[in-house]
Structure formats: structure tokens, C-alpha cells
Image (spheres, helix red, strand yellow):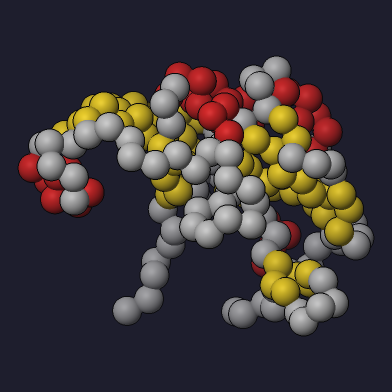
Length: 173
């Protein structure tokens, strides 16, 4: 059995309204918002008496989603919002955008801060990391030049090759 698709990435937040506004400004669409609780929710999360409010944000192409969750009970037990980009565990979600500079300008109005600077990766991408509300870390990638791989329609994937830096991931069709 193989994976059919990646459905969504979950991000836990305190201020779900600010997170919705941030991802809306980025270009995602609010697909739905609802409370979640009950025996089935307890069973899937492993948390007894869990109560959570979720908001599902859909990418413009309709293929990916970000699930924003605000836990009402039990209380949140860990906070990774200010962890550096080389921390273990969930790090960031990368989005391909039309114009990195325009996107950053719009997101700054929603409190986003660039981690360092926009860089150019070869003749392929302009890239940066930015932190949104509550320190949510996202990557932004603007395609430049000719794109010939399957990554031309999605975010870039990179692999480390020895000490020589990053190179685009090999295509595996």
C-alpha cells in the first residue's frame, strides 16, 4: 500500500483568528471551521476529554491544506514557537508564491517577520523563511528561470550532498 496524497499539515495556535487572517493573506482560503470533541477525538489524539477548535485552510490549487487547531482542553503542554530552524521535529511549511517581495509586504501587515533575508538559489528560486503569528515558521519560494522538474508546480525540495551545500532533490517518477 502506498500513500495516496498528503492531506494537511497541522499547526497548534493560541489565536486562531490571527492565524486564519495570516494564512488568508498568504492566499489560502478558509474551507471550514468547527469545534471537535467526543470519544472519537479522544481516541485519535490520545488526549482524554479533548476539546479543540479547528480551521481548515486550503491552498489555491485545492491540493493541500493547513489545519489550524486551538486546544481548549486539555491545556497545551509544550511551546516550540521560538525554536530555531535547526530544531528537531516539525519545522515549517514551504509555499511557492508568485512574488516573494510582494508576499512578504502583505504578510508584514499581519505581523510576519523575515527570519534573515531573501536569498537566491542558483537560477531556480528566490527563498526565505518568515515567522507569522505566534512564531509560525513558513518558507516562501519564488520560481525564477526555467523549471523542468515536477517541482515546477510545487515547493522546492532540497537534499544535502556532503559538505557542498544544497541541491535540488532528484526526480523520482
